[in-house]
Each structure stands twice: as structure tokens, then as C-alpha cells.
Length: 446
Image (cartoon, rainbow, N blue to C red; front, side, top):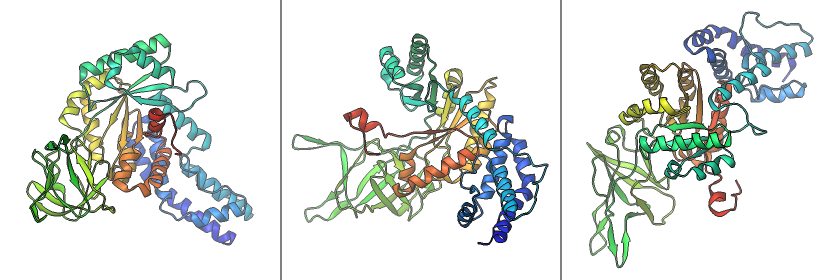
């Protein structure tokens, strides 16, 4: 690419940013003061991503100018500086638009750090990363256990509100606070709203000799009927000639799902271990066929997660149970996690509930990105969440891998991180990479 051509391509990108600056200013007016510049930068980043930058990177590097590859957190300044340097190499003088609000690299780092410290607390020791641990019910009464967690690095104690009750949660919180006092070390309380529970229902327990069978045996090509009303699930029934008499059946623990499903869409069970496709539908049930690659027999048990990666679900992310638990979380949590968020309307609902409680100081709010819709809507979710004073994002790699495919998870995580950096929003990476080390004493290769 000739230098004049490179210059013209950069001018197109720069002019695109300038032409849309009025929209960036409108967006900034709608968000909290903490996020005005962040919202503008996120919008500019989305504009930048519309352009194919791959060819430009190499040619910029060829003439010794830093590329646009790492411009997420300060888009306008990076593009303007790159264009100005390119013009200087081409022996031309040029000055960017003087009335465009912008930040450079150092200022962007200060904003990112401020947002991180606002929600997760200041840096402690040499580590810049905080460690969050999900507390088991045992933490409610075992202060030695909690102290040991804190001594070994826990700085955020997560309480999963899908389990236990307010009495147990309060005991956990008191135990953490006492351990913090004893160790003279702050530990933040993170409370995760449970969101809608979508799991497999009860399964009939049968006997085979002395062995109890409490699962549905299923393999590639088998049919399974999925009910929205509670039934006792069972395996398929066959006749003496091995002819199918009755297909396997199971229920799911949410009665607002079936209406949103369509023939041809997939249903995934047990973290995606069992993959099925819908081949028939009636008012309150669907029939699906198992489409796993392997012919190996699989076991579907009660209480396993169910995912609908191809379906647009209309059930609310904020359940009545969540709404009833929000006053407790506002009273005791430093951070509230919002599970199963998918659409801007979900964030609007949470903001409305929070504002109705009229708390002077709100805890940090973390959006949990765990499904395809949340990933695809992430910029809009962040724009809306920026109306709050302190926000963050949690990446759930396991859930995303089920919804989007394990082959995409590396790319998807990178994209989420880039968008969050553009928005100056801190990220929690929820993972189980330490699980093998904890259980066996041997780390995985990952």
C-alpha cells in the first residue's frame, strides 16, 4: 500500500469518528458521571470495528508507526495520533479537530484503575488481580475455614443466592467480617442473584438387581420428550422385539420456556454433554432427537443444566425471588451479581428495582455474561448499565462454551475483554482451571 493510500484510509476512519461525535455526546449525557468518557470511547470503538483494519496494521508497522491493534481504551486519540504521524512521514502537517473530547493511553489507564478500585477495592500487595472464592454453606459456622481462605488469597467472598437462605447468608457474612477483623484484611462480599433456574426435573428411580438406576439412559438417534409441566422423567420403554413403545421423557424446572422453542432448534443438557434437536412441538412439550457425534450411551440425571443456544427466550432475568432478595443484598453486599442477563430490558428492570429502594449508596453491579444473547448484546448492556455508579462484568467461560461451542470460547473471551476495556469496565473471569489442582494436587496443562 502506498503512503498516500494509507493516509486516505486513515482519514476515512478518522472522519467517521468525527462525523458521529454528536451521537457519542448524546450517549454521554445518558450515563452516570463516572462513565461519560467511557461510554463515548465504547461508541468510538464500535465505530472503529466497522472498518477492516487488518491490511492497515502491517503497513503502519512497515513505516514504524504503532498500529491500531491496541487502541481499545483510547480510540479517538490513537486514531488521530496515527493519522498525524502518517502525515508527518508523508511530509505533511495536520492538526486534529480541537473540540473533540478525548483521552490518551495514560488517562485511559487511570480511568480503568479507578473503576476497578471503586468496585473491587484498592490494590493489595504486589498482586493487581483479586481472587474470588464461592463460599460453601460450611462458611456460615466455620470461621477457621474462612480465615484459611483469606490467608491463602481470598479477597472477594461470593455467596450464591441459588442456595441456602437469608439466615445462612447472614451467618456467612458475619463470619467473613469477623475473619477480616481478625486478620486486619478487607474481604468484599459478592452476592449473586440466582436468576431463573432451568434444570432437568425429577427422574424415576428403578432397580436393576441390587443397583439403583436414577438416570435416563440415552444415545445418538434416540427421542426424548421435554415437558414444561412437572412429570417424573423416565427412560424409553421397548417391547420384546426391541420396538419403541414409549420415548424417554423429562421435565424442566421452568414453565415459561416451551412456548419460545421452535422445530430445528437445539436443546443442550448437562453442560452440553447431551445435544438434541427439536423435531416436534405441542402446547406444553417438545420432542427432540439426540444428535451427539458419538454412539456412546449417555446418562441424563435430575438437576442438570439445560441450555437453548438457538432460541430467543422471553422469560425475565430478574425473578420474583431475586426481587424479594434484593433488599437483603443491598443491605449486606459490596457487589451484586446479575445472572442470566440477556437484553437491555433486563438491565432496565434491575435499575428500576434498585432505584425504588432509595438507597443513598448502591453496591457495585456485575453483569454475568453466560449466554449467546448477552455476548451479542454486550455493548448495549454496558451502555445501559453505565447509568449506575459502579459496574463490572463476569465472563462465564463454561456456560459460554456450552452456548457458543468450545471451538469459539477463546475468541469470544477475547472479544468480551476488548469491549470491556473500551468501556473501561473491570472483568471477573469465572473459571474452574484450579479445580483439578484443588482436588488432586496436580494442575491441568491449561
